[in-house]
Length: 350
Image (cartoon, rainbow, N blue to C red; front, side):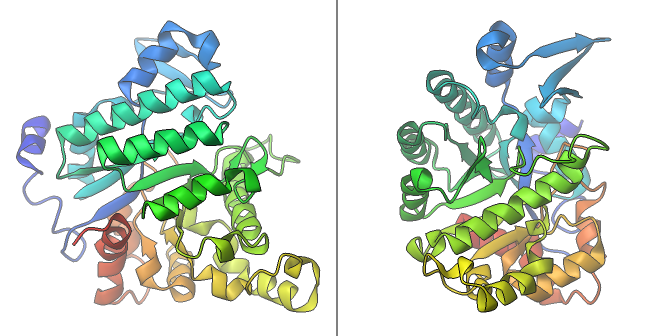
């Protein structure tokens, strides 16, 4: 029944009217296309990962821990049915970090990226009113990443690119990736920056801290490198959406600004002041705390904040639109920006 409702567009009374009305967009929503799953199953050695079956359920290797391959990762109708239940009208889908595959050789990385983009495009084609696609690039080979970017934009019409906040220990701000970022800028796409492997390693092994602490920290490091390297001054129109509320940046920006004033090191590349560059970034509202989300909006502006669900990983909120509705003193104008306005601006939709 859910699938039949989804084919018609959405389940009546669920999406489009919850939590204050208006359409809702989700810019942080993950998939693992079936073609990628099939390729891993056929040749786990080449892809450096594996799919296991336990008790009739499939699991995939998520950086050393086995995570269930839920239907919402691979089955587009299951994804749409969840969106109906959650009240999400439109979701921009991107691959889950465990299948970035930056650690593979270039040839396999290119194959994986093509499979991912073809799979995402097929999902979008099934439900074009509900889904938008984000390109995945083989960043271990910047020239191949350029070619795949151009192909994904030309053939699939993607308007966003998901990138790791670092690439196998190398900051995204590194010069070797500059031509990829420049091409994204010139194509008028935006970057969705999502961590997968924290640059800082010490003390991360216990308590799932690689996610709790490491992911926000890696986003913070990415932003700092992009700021102080001069990359953002060079790429003046590049738009970057940061996952998980922007890591620690919106809450420690004053420290960046103070350090820039009193120290010489942040100015060695002639970078603009941090507060000015902070205004270049966009953020999802996934802070897991309404007061933190309120602070994020105060710092960045509601027109720089969008809904992010992290679906179907367990670090996503149970009620993503309700989490936005719980933000203190949220005005109707702010609600509209967070629910849809910011996303539509980034996706270039009316």
